[in-house]
Length: 101
Image (cartoon, rainbow, N blue to C red; front, side, top):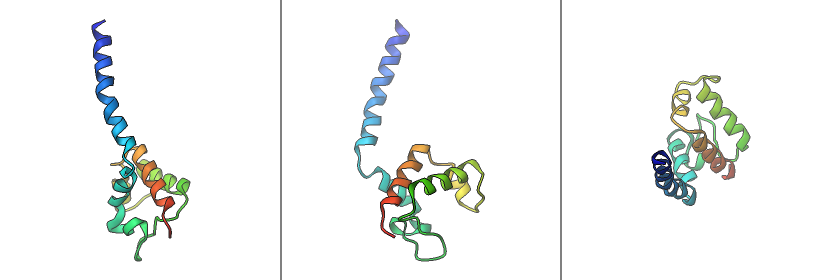
């Protein structure tokens, strides 16, 4: 019974955190902002690196997962991708897919 109480308490503590992350409409934008230095504001590159804005979400997801898993090589992206959860990658991909090129 004691273990059940601890598990219930843990779930109660985590629920507000999960709700707060889902309830904030700016989470995807905030995650995507990390990409601005190289890929431009809102994913519109000024040259040199590819723009992310307007790319298909499935393509962005595949590319990021390939970087994260080491299936694609890159000087920087292979390391950066490892720092994101699958949920964060999904949110950023959704954000960039919704932006105008």
